[in-house]
Length: 579
Image 1 (cartoon, rainbow, N blue to C red):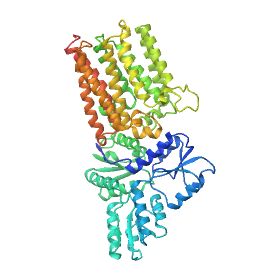
Image 2: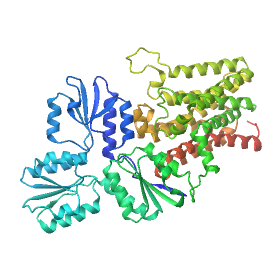
Image 3: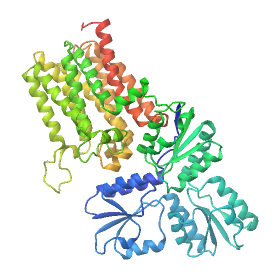
Image 4: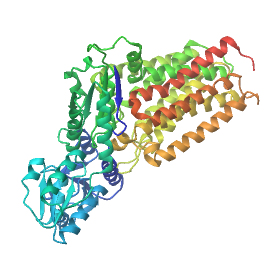
């Protein structure tokens, strides 16, 4: 079975802007309680995440307690002028997240109503955007929802026609033709969002190529319903779902190719889950549980792949330093990394797995994963003790720092109470921990002393782990902002993060290229340049995100660690240890 994700699936610019605005408010200080005037977007899962951030929707302004210092966020759909006046009379702080495309329609209506025009609004009666637009029509607005409504319109002399920004383009064109027959003098405005038009056009093309389509979005999302309608009009079997759990009831196994698209309010993490679950089926409806591909995804989802990757990086670091390879060190690195990753995912009310592709499996088997993580941590300490007292002491200190990383040590009321809350700390601390257990710890059993080989090995692991960490955080930016994780991409933005990654890539390239000629490391450092060329491939794959799910991209990024281990073993077999 092949699965293709539409490039336009997910948040539209207006929704993204609204979500970003409300999250910026949440990060600022001294604003009191934060409310949104109605659900910020038509996606229950996103609304629930926002509630956990203290951002609550209210259906009516009067639901906000009198005298409370509060900020009210106007959502992307916009509101009527009367509602805006009521908010101001209440003395509430306003953050206007009205989509610029909606604001343009509001301005058109206001302008032409002032000139005596009757405004015909083509859209869904009762939709929040339509309610707001009618407010600007000042009693001179008529909502047309269907062709039948258009036929029954009364004739007027001065008429302006606008559309709900998420309206179906072909339906709008048909309704315009009907109205023009009755009122040829009517002025028509192209107010359908260009993002909506692009999404609908892409969906039409995709549906014509696929055996079936899955449309993902909130049950109350008008634009998502339109996508499903467009797909069905192509004659393609279409399934409209809100979450991946609904896939269990669908007969997807009978189709060889499935397209996936999503409404403008659907977050990436929900889309990724749907794509991940669909790829677990094959023709005939049987799960590919025994396939190599699904086994690989299982390793990625459960952090076992990361653990194996840590062991592989140890192989590279040991050979860079010309150390003997030991299974003890391989297992120490793997067990420690597995333990720290899993335990960190369950900290702070499980915030590290909420919305991720790991959430379902981790929350379903939480006791098992915690047990395995603790067992892995104890095993790593026992293995380190077997290597020597220095190794045990070093790993104990690293483990203690890992525990302190999550513990609030500063007084209540401070913005950052623990190290993990510091912006960007996750990327740096994880890279440092990996570098210590793969490059420094193995050297403690071989007459530990600082040298250039250790420095090169440390820099290699730190750089490749940091690059992977930032790149996966770029993929997860949307969800990280929703749950409040202040990763480097969230803080400085995607473009700056990519520049940082490229600078580190360039620095590591130069280090590996000159380390052996300069006598700083073994010649394996030259071979490890292949890992950097693989990173360039990953850059391209991340730019083409629609071709792969988030879990697949994550796994491909971590495959760089495995490549480092394979390169090191091949170098050992064919080249040896010569400097």
